[in-house]
Amino acid sequence: MDEERKRRYWQRYQLAKQKGVKFYPDIIFKDLVVAFAIFLLLVGLATFVGVPNEPKADPNDTSYIPRPEWYFLFLFQLLKFFPGKLEWIGTTVVPLLGVLALLLLPLYDKNPYRYWKKRKVAVSLMTVVMLGIVGLTIAAVVTTPPQEEQPALAATLAEKIAVGLDLYSVHCVECHGAEGEGGEIKGVEGLEGVVLDPLNHPDFMYTRTDETILNIINYGQPEHGMPPFGLAYGGELTQSEMEAIVTFMRYTWDDRVELPEEAARVGAIPTLGPDEVPSYEVHVGPIVKRYCVSCHRPGKKNNNYYMRTYEEIMTSGDHAPNVIPGDLNSNLILMLHRQEIEAGGPMPPTKALKPELIEIFERWVAAGAPQTAEEAAALSAPKATETVGATETITPTVTAEATEIVTPTGTVEATATMTSTQPAP
Ligand code: HEC
Ligand code: HEC
Image (cartoon, rainbow, N blue to C red; front, top):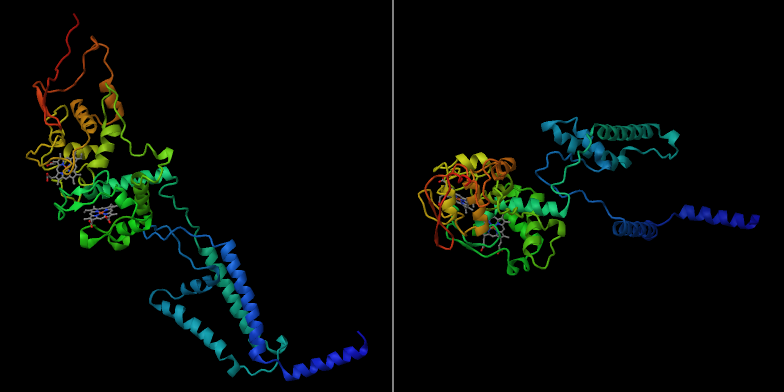
């Protein structure tokens, strides 16, 4: 550049500086260009990078430590100086004063200089404010306890389905049936005789999304007698528990959805070998949990017969004992065979258990109602002194008379029970 051009440029520059730049449209236009570029950048980031989601809010999770984003931490920390009723000073008064101070700045600061050495008061004030913000932020970070990793309700899909099945068994079976089959409600206070459509049917599963089902469980349909289950609506289930129930329903009752292989055995009730003695632990417990506990727990209509544990099954109830080891005339067995006895019945009220499940109860009671698998194994293992012929069955503590059992089909079978084994010839 030669001298002449330099001079002319300098002149133009001085001229332009005197005239100034118009706020509208010049500066606004530049602002808009920059704002638009930043907007595109944000859209791009949101689309291609995204924001990591925290898990869904769970009102039951007391270990969650809520904290604002880092740029608000100093305000959050400030609140700690204004405990309880003074909080409004921290949340409202202090920030308001700060904003007002900035807003009124042109009115009280008429200093014409821009050079920092000539603006000592303003610069030192701002320095103090910035140091305060940084200090408060650091204090907030340091005092935040590490977030404990919340153990997930269920890690795998199979586990989630299993959890859902358990929760469904406890909370839903009393009205909707163990297989979601619906039908007439019996034995539930206030809903006696109400007829429910099946949930395990394409008419239901095909026409409801997971979200719809979740909402029904969460809010209930109080006007129809379906209670709300969400914690926020007076129920006792957390968000993730309700999600597990929906997952269980979808994978079990929607025939368009393939049950993953590792989940296929979820909820299966162990089958019995021909000579095996069932135990509470392995066989009876899972059946009871699935078909009885929903009604036979506290707070339900059930003659005070609770079935959550072995002890409860053996001892509780207005007509206790409902299970007498060795006695096939026990209330529980008679009621499973849909007899109407003094204690009530039939059980479960709506629909008979499958014959193979009733058989498990019978063989369990007949063998003395053993609790653990070891006790049952000890009962079924043939004892050396007693194994004489191949035809003998060992039935300990069995009553001497013949017991009449009414089978679900209505025929009466006489089962002669043995009291001792025959001596070898
Ligand atoms: C005290 C009885 C009761 C219990 C317990 C209960 N429900 Fe219900 N449920 C009902 C009634 C009554 C309806 C209304 C049916 C109707 O409108 O025809 C209903 C409706 C529903 C519906 C909507 C059905 C439809 O056709 O739209 C779903 C889904 C449902 N319940 C799921 C559940 C689940 C899951 C549970 C367990 C967490 C549960 N219910 C527990 C009584 C109950
Ligand atoms: C839908 C709710 C419901 C289900 C499911 C249910 N029960 Fe009951 N159960 C009742 C009610 C209600 C009574 C009170 C008697 C009556 O009304 O018949 C009762 C009473 C009993 C009694 C008598 C208790 C006593 O001391 O008087 C026995 C035994 C029993 N049930 C066994 C079972 C068994 C075993 C199962 C599971 C296979 C089962 N029940 C499932 C509602 C239910």
